Length: 151
Image (cartoon, rainbow, N blue to C red; front, side, top):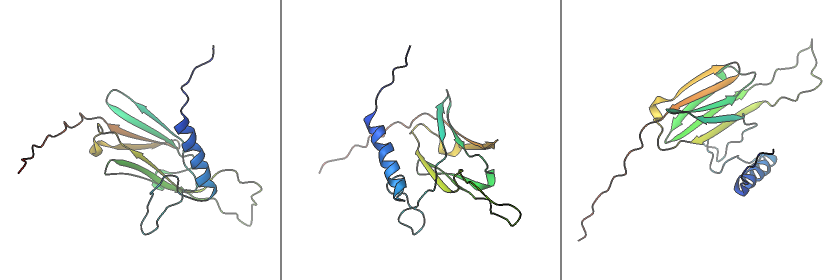
């Protein structure tokens, strides 16, 4: 029996736009800024899995061939950023590269965090080329109602 999945035309459009942007060296997401550069180009993007448990969200990013020192994880204003660089091995006099299929260079992935995540509880671990970022859930803040006196 075949699995039925819901068609999401917006997701397909975003994939198409992402491929177009990569082709022309444009940013993957509008407004990505780094320092004085208007846009920061990512050479590649690691695949991620995002799952939710009873008390947390977990993001697993595939980073084969990288070390934990090559990766930086930050949270700022409700956005989780994973960035780093995979450096290409240099050709030496004693060996010659015949084919290079792996992707090298810098990457940047950003995720907007839901309101029920405690920004101060973020933990990250790196094991066998997989970065796992755990974000603990918290009770969402109750919306404040402020009464304004009309003059």
